[in-house]
Length: 456
Image 1: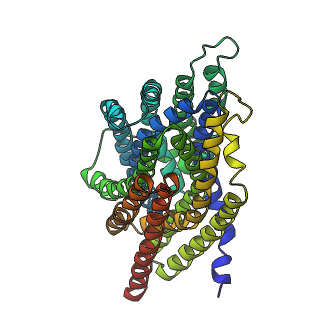
Image 2: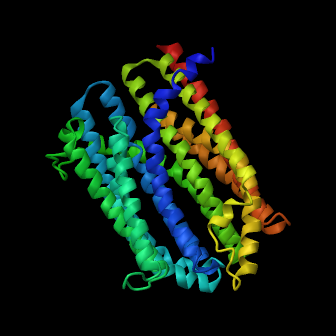
Image 3: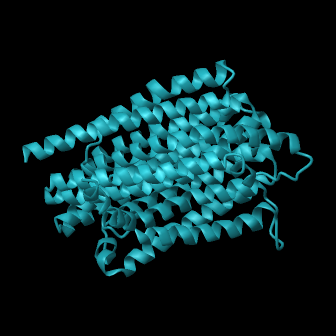
């Protein structure tokens, strides 16, 4: 019985591993920024956290919208329909690029809101120049996502990974030179980290385009594109899939952003601790995201073939694999909860010893709660991937809103600001939201696939 699921593990991992590494690469940019900026002080680390809270919201909309491309390309690939696949890619790239520009402009307009969020003023003044440059990097980032989702839809998951790895090397080198002013470069502090992020994202999109243009399977898709010759039918189809998918990701990322802002109300040290725990959790979440893409691609392929019993079996095999990997991460967080936060701060810094010690103590407690929600988070995102592969996005959007904003956020708000739990209370709310999402989404998948099998 169990073997019918476990026999898929090898192929699922083969498909998902490059996506995992690529997504980890995105998070690794943030990790490097946080570690390097953390050497400057807790105010600088909190400023990057505050600036990125705006970015997370915008990125969630851009990345969420771009996921519409993958199931359409995967279904067309399953049907061996080149024309539909190319149309999905072209229209998706156009919409994603347009969205990237709109999100950049939106952040510029929203930037002054930071002064009204009860955040420490020193943190706000450090965050604003950082945010200007990082916001502009949304344009190449969302365009990259369109290329990535197309590549994933063709099961060519390794090429976005290569692009992300190259971008990380560029980011690390520029961070080192510009944050600290090495080898004659200007010492720019956290603005140097923003420059590194912007340049690395430009490199990422250019490199992936060159790779796809050079490969036989993808060359015909990405060349000779009439970018502004658009069909309303395909535009509407991508928007119908992309908009709810963007909202799904927005609802989840927004509750984590709310956690950043609630932590800021508690002070700069709780906010810095929140950033450390959030960054570590984000890295493990990217592994689950890799499996979510594998679920989207494989379910999309089986939908194209109308093999619904096989679709259900493959999807459940991915859910099981995701559960097992998340359990390993949970154990790592529990065992090393005291040690992991020390990566981010200079524990030998006598001047900031009191602040650093407090940040490490709070972050260690948060990692214990993060350990528990590893499993809920992994299950909800892989089930969501399978539902996107089925092109079922409207009901899951409603489910994610209920889970995060009717269940999770009120708990975070009350426990964080009105009880002695404080930072831990904020994260208990996150745990409640993610668990509700995982349960409700699985129920949706279970009902939907059984109905498809019966009706065939």
